[in-house]
Every structure is written in C-alpha cells, then in structure tokens.
Image 1 (cartoon, helix red, strand yellow):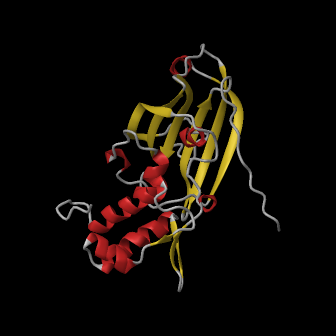
Image 2: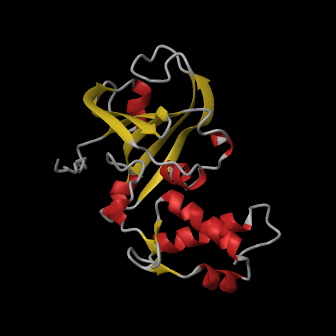
Length: 242
C-alpha cells in the first residue's frame, strides 16, 4: 500500500508497485492496466497522482497508451534491457541459472588516466566493479564507467541486490539508443585472475561496450571479463529488412 508519510512521492510509490506487478507477471504483456479512475479508487488517491505514475511507466517502456483503448503492458520483445547485449546475470536468469553479485569496488567518482580506449580518458567518471557468480563459481568480472552528470547521485545509491540496469531505467528513466561492442582475447593481471579463480596471465574473453543515450553519446562504458570454459556467451542479432 501507499505510505502518505513517506518522503517518497505517492506517484513514485505507485509506479514502483505497478512496475513490480508487471515484472512479476501480475500484469502480462498485452494486458490492459486498470483505468486511472479504478487505480485512484483502489489506492484512495487523486487521478493526477495516477497519471504521473503512468507517465513514469511509459518512460520506462513498460506500458504504452492506445488512444480510445487504454494503457497496455508492452511485450518483452519491445523492451531493451540495458545490459542484455552480452552474457550478464540477466542472461543467466533467462536460462534458469541463479546468480549472485559481489561488489569489488563500490561506486566512486574518479579521474580516468592512461586508458586510451575508454571514452572517459582524461575525464571524470563514476566507476564500479562487481563479480557475477554462477554455480558457486565466479564467471564474469565487470567494470563500469558512467557519465558523472547524467548519473548524478549514483554514488549515493545502495546497490545491494540491485542490478545496474534496473537502477538506470527505474531511477534515471534512461534507455540506450545505440551501442557498440568489441571482443578480444585478453590476458588477465594477477589480481583480476585471482578474482576469477584463474591462473595469472590466463587468457579470457574481454568485451568492451559503449552505450549511447539520447543527447549523451558514450554515457556508459564497460569492460566484461568472461570465463568461457563453463558457459558459452552468445549475442542475438536482430536483422531489419530495408
């Protein structure tokens, strides 16, 4: 239920409730969301509050309004998960494999130096790194660099049991427009090899990814170091006819 005493605005509380209902399957793709009048009556709030909450769901890409018909839950193939371009925890979950995340370095604002392939080289960026563990083995080491102005306040967010993609979409209402990925074999340093339970200088798959957002090119840059002896990492490519 909504908490009028909370510092979180009611429309944000309502949008969080509806978001969870959509993601848990209470409302499935193609389902119509109850009317503003119905939701307002259910939660004893005004229609403007409901409308603000629905606006957030539209910006998240979870629902779409159809004039004269109502508001419908979008099908999953219309939604783009921020980190679905390569094997991450979300990809494991779709295969029914449970994963856990371990923070290696929490979010900090730092000056990026001597990193020529990094779009934030000689600039400031938020940095964080984490380890994805599947079947009790570390499988992916991820390092993220994020635009400090676009993601203002990122270092104040608690990432315990929260995915970065959800934070970006739910709190900043952002989705990437385009992205670029490069793949190569990389030889790990001693420290990174230890995190992945590998021998020093062990070869590994490195994925470098750059994501572009509306009005903010190269707003997120990441490096993923992926162990491939247990899992095969793949990427689905959608081909459009012209």
